[in-house]
Image (cartoon, rainbow, N blue to C red; front, side, top):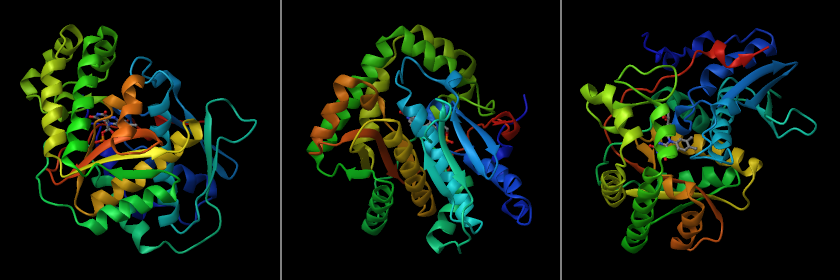
Length: 341
Ligand SMILES: Cc1cc2nc3c(=O)[nH]c(=O)nc-3n(C[C@H](O)[C@H](O)[C@H](O)COP(=O)(O)O)c2cc1C
């Protein structure tokens, strides 16, 4: 099986500066596909139409058990949109976005136009350069403190996308969150349908397919890889996973919750754009990030998360940040497979 990680070596000097808008927009997709996505499903499709790049949800890649409303699917698409916009800005355009265009196809999530010319700013260029280095890092992080200015920058980036990033600072808050994550792990892993869906997106070894998650990225040894998906499908490993996640929460220097004011597709797209900015800024600052979204995925636990940090807003993502090892990139499908005519 070919290594499907070449997508990460995208060469910015190949940008078709003098080409027509349609060719420039198509180039942006090379960056968009490097976005994070739930279970690495890459649930997006792109189409260049006139002077705009259209982004569609690929609902054939949905996770009906873990994400029945397609909330995380749309967040993932929002992250791809945010990265495409950042790339447009880096190449000297405004990158104008229209969310959920009226009268369009039900799966049409957004349109991106190059827009007017503008010089890229230094912070955007820094985040742009971080695109190929960003990873989801599921290992434990060192306990070193993270500079307060970096944390404030991440909050400003979220606010810029109409989202709110809140840190869980007290030991009590962190313990309560660890409790919810552990409870969610157990509930999810008790459910054979959840396990079957997860196993379907697990891929053997370090050489990922074009999509899905490698077993190695969860810290399982490579020589277990053939068996691990079958084991996950068959057995309830909830107690072990809950114990590991409890430790990860307790040991992470920064635990952060991303909220929105309302809960609908526009908020999910904005969450994804905020997520892209936050993760790229963190990467540029030498940090690693991972997700612990399990309690957000279970309606009975979701509301409790906000209450822990004293927020009435709606939790969308639970993340941890810190310093950790550099892990191999995950697979990506070829760009030609996600661009439609
Ligand atoms: C909306 C969303 C939710 C996610 N939830 C989780 C999660 O709960 N646990 C986890 O380990 N990774 C989670 N991820 C990370 C994805 O699994 C990861 O982005 C994907 O496997 C691709 O790997 P990469 O981020 O290293 O490119 C999530 C990503 C997104 C965008």
